[in-house]
Length: 428
Image (tube, rainbow, N blue to C red):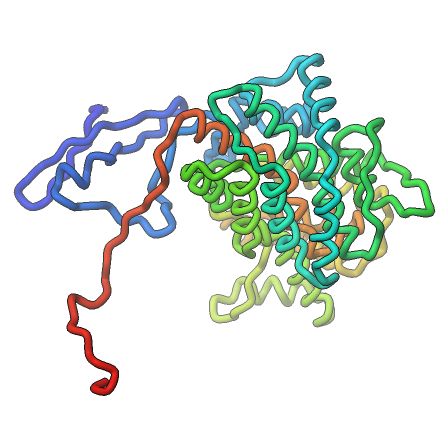
């Protein structure tokens, strides 16, 4: 293959270099297009065919169902690593040694205290405020309590900013849940691991000891790993483009949280549970709703099946299905909503219509089931997604700043009115 792409516009031909990735992805480098062609640009709504950056963090092949972090398969990481190891890998590029991991967690614990004035901000929110709105606001508010900007040319400054948000963010997540449930705020314990501490901060009652369940710890650990990064999705692109203006880490993360909130992105697992609730209220007939999903004239949309990126089975769903089965089996939860979910899963895996179209349950389907079984309210599902995605966002922000990428500034094709004369108000 030539390393040059040719573009013909009218009688003129222009040449642009090809850029190749380490997995043989090929891109046309068009940064000189507008200048070379006297104003011609490309248009790609949703950026489905546009690479915004070169990145060494995550590789995703939707056709083959491949997901890798820094070259490591998601299957092997989910089986052999814990979330904090994966976070270190994503952010710093290599798996940590035992000494590096111990120091990383010790430094995170040293930063796992949130300024007491943040509690005043939490108190100002009504109980019915959506947790994602609360989390985005609290993350942004951290900027006010940590006003100095990060010197990205200093490894020490960068590291301090990273452990600071890795320490404080789980506290904000837990406080967001406890605010909703009317429970006093809780800081957990330095004696617990990262994931164990998250569960304790979320669920410990003031008058009771919280008993950690190994199956719940394992399931949450895997969920956080599976959500840790996913290439240039909506929220990650948002973090990078906000950070490209040299906005601070906390402000960039807050913007990413807001992007994640949408039902087409991080809110998908919440949408799954809302769908299951609606099916249950209508009698719980899963066959009926599978029929509605196959009917092109029916407005019903089956949530949690298939994926816009993965054209085959979502590799993350294969991993988390096992954890979902273990959680449901161990906790023995009696819940008609979960019965509906199991019915839909069974129908989809056996129905030829869904098998032929590879419309398998995806990670959002199983994560919603697990969070429901754990007792996490549906409004908190996207917050849990954000908790998992945190190291990926940090890694992407860090990579973008270290590479000194230019400020994001997409072009547009104007389709509005041409020049018009102003009409005085008494003549309109």
